[in-house]
Length: 156
Image (tube, rainbow, N blue to C red; front, side):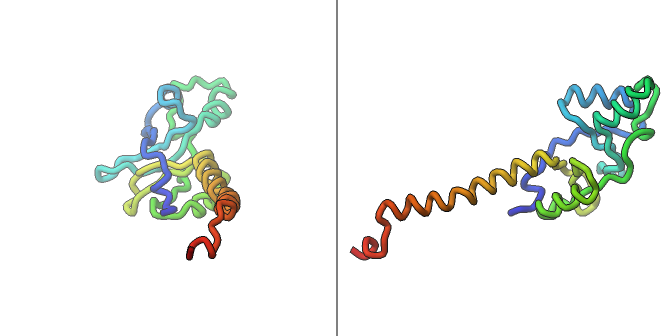
């Protein structure tokens, strides 16, 4: 039930390492995302090999006055991204993000093929829903008690 595959975004914006940073920036703008998963095609599947964020583009390219069309994604991407298996639990995703200091994790299947992505924001929303559900238990218990659901009423 709490497998990360049940909560991930299956639409993963991805790009190949040979693309230009300008192409990546355009793709991020078109898809309204702050990152792309850099992939390598392998036996008909896409395997994550890096991550590129809008922050990387700003700090490593724009902030250094480098023309983004002259730099390839592979030259600035974070290599060997932390990933998580689709059958791992939510807590594992949180721990992995925390240990690595990252806000996004590509999700892979048993073959290492890209199947989704989960972000820290996604996990915060999931945890908020769980916390709200837990918080409502007491008020529901009180409401149940106030409606006269006593042991005597059950047998009368």
